[in-house]
Length: 108
Length: 513
Image 1 (tube, rainbow over the protein chains, first blue to last red):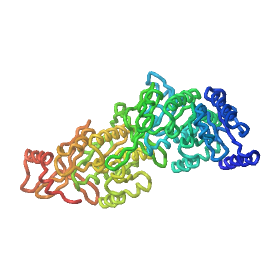
Image 2 (image 1 turned 135 degrees about the horizontal axis):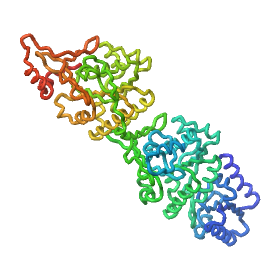
Image 3 (image 1 turned 45 degrees about the horizontal axis):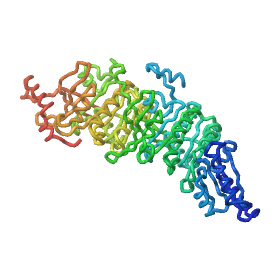
Image 4 (image 1 turned 90 degrees about the vertical axis):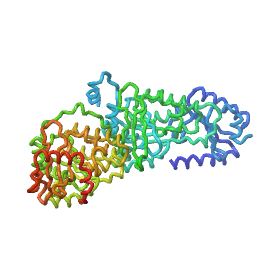
C-alpha cells in the first residue's frame, strides 16, 4: 500500500518537470452510466474553457480497470482527483456544479 | 449441510433456505441460520460485538462449511482487524494465505470529498465484486455500514442501500451487514423495516452494575424464530448465545432413581432416592447443613463413578473441599480423576444468565450426571425476581432435556417461607423439596430435615433429626427426653409448629456454622 502511494506521489513531480504548472487530473467513471457520461462531458467542457493547454486528463473506467479502484480507494463514482498542483483534491459527482468544481480547482 | 437443514425443517411446513452461522445458539434461535444468499442486518451500538459476531460467521463458514468469505471493513484497517480477532483464536493469517478469506479496508472520508453533482457508490460494487471473485466467496460481511454512509446525502444513501441489498442477492452470497442502531440513519429512517429479510439487534445493557450483552431477532421474513432477548457471551472461544428454548414438553421423564447419598434420606424418598433427571431444592436457614447435604450427594455420585459438576457461589472450592473433608467426604481424589468439576464464580461478577451460560459451556464439555448449584439464592441478588425465576425455570428445563439431575441449595432468611417469595418461586418448579432447619428439642438446637414435597413418589412426612458427624450425615427420629415421651398427637403438633410457625425458635437459635 505505502509503496503504491509513494509511486503515485512521484507522478506529479515528473509532471512538474515536464510541464510547468500543469494540472494532472484523473476522472474515475463507470462505463457510460448516466452520471459518468455527464461527468465526462462536463469535465471536457471545463478543461477546454478554463484549462486549455495546461492540463493532463486521464479518464479511467473502473469497470475496465477495477484494480485501480482499489489503489485509489474509489467508492463513490464519478470522482475527479486533482493530483497536481498539490494538495490532492477529490470531488465526487457528475461535475455539473461548475462553480464548485472551479473553486475546488482554485480557478476561481 | 443441506441434509441438516432438511432434518431441522422436517416438522416445519416450509423449507426456507438457510445458512448455518456455526455460532453457538444463534442457529437454534433462527432454526437453522440466517437466510441463505440474502443479506442480514446486524444492528447494535458500539461495543456490542457486531464485528466479532460477523467475523465468527465468516470464520465458521470457512472452517465448518468450506465457504470462503469476504470481509469489507469500513472502520478498521486489515491488520488491526486481524490483530483484534486474534484474541478470539481466529487465525486469519492462515485463511488469508489459503485464499479462503479476503479482507479489504474501504473508507470514504466525507471531509476529503466535495460533491459536485450526482453520484453513486458504483466503486463499492466494483470492488466488492472483485473481492468476491477473488476467493469465490459465499459469505460476505460489510462492517459497518453507517461508517460507509456517514455524511452522504440521504437520497443517495437510501437508493444505494437498496441497490446494495439487491446486488448482494444477485451475487448469491449470504451477507451480514452491520450497522449502528439508534442515532444512525437506519433506525431513524426505518429503512431496515422494509428492505432487509432478516434483522438482528445486539444490545449491551447494564443492570445493577452488571453488563449483559443480548441478542434479539427483530425480523425474519419467511421464517419462524425465537422472539425473546437472548443473552450472549464473548470469550476466548467466540460467541455463545444461550437460547434456553423451552423443550420441557418433549422431555422424557425417567423412572430411574439416583441415590441422595444418604441412606436414610433415600428411605424417606420412597426408599430409592431422587428421580434421575429431576430437580431438587434444599432450602434452609444459615448453618443448617445445606452445603453438607449437597456435598454428600456429590460424593455419592462420584463414588458411583458418574460425572458431577459442583457450582459454588458462596465458598471457594478449596474451602468446600476442606470443610467436607471434616465430615468424611474426601473430594480431592475425584477432582483429580476428573469426575468432579468445580465451577466457582462470584455472583456479582456477572449476571445470572451469564453464570448459566458459563455453566452450560462446562456441561457441554464434561456432560455431568448431576449438577449442584450452591447456593442459588446468592445469584438472586442480581436482578428482579421474576427474571430470575424464568431464567431458572428455563435452566432447569434445559437440564431436564439432558437428563441431568440438578440440586440447588437455597439459603432462606430467618423467617417463614411465606416471607420469601423468591423461594416459593423456586419451590414450585422443583420436583423434590427438602427443607433443613434448626428446631428446638429439649432446649437444644437440633438440625432437622423433612421432605416438603417430592413429585411422583410416596415420601415420608416425618421430620427427622439430621446429624452431621465426622463420618458423614445420618438421620434419625427425633428422640424426646425421658419424661417427655410426647404422645403422637403432641408430636405431630410439634412437627406442625416446626414447619410453619417456628419463626421464633429459629430466630433465637440461629448460630453460625
